Image (cartoon, rainbow, N blue to C red):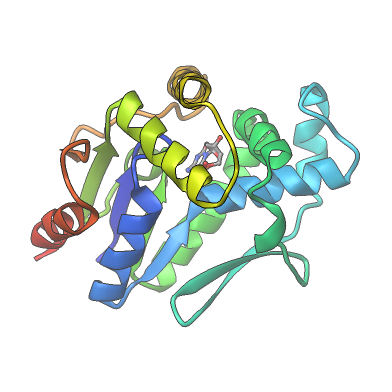
Length: 216
Ligand code: DC
């Protein structure tokens, strides 16, 4: 069985997808990490977000792969595990621009489809139910209000001792939603046959239980 979980940034997709994958004995695939690794590769090739005309050619040389050990996903560029480098603001910013490119998407989508052919997956992203795995047995569109997602992100950063401004986090999340939902290639949207779960008033366990019920 394949499970597709899509939704906007900060809705809790990865936390919940990991729990669901562990309960089902499936592999968790974080497709956002693949877009981030591609962004890191493009940066290392000397490109910036304003070099959009060079993304198609340059992405061809990227050798990105995923490996799983004890349920933990590592993303590799060639033989280097780049997990530690893909969550910086610079990479987030580049990924949000380079993920719009049709050639970048084609390359990563076919890798994601190959993975799901060989093993049961719980895959999260923006276009899994609509594009990557249109035949997934369970599809979920997981969302939460902008205020709630911003508050969660704010609490996470404060817990790490990183000072930030709640209003600014809210604005960044709203901007990212707009970009993800209005791009030309595979915009974020709920698949017709996806179940909508709004996690604003729910705990992580409640959301995971609801998805496991759908799987059962
Ligand atoms: O989920 P995330 O923040 O790690 O995703 C990083 C970027 O990649 C973000 O800008 C959205 C994009 N993305 C995408 O376009 N399609 C996916 N399936 C997953 C992520």
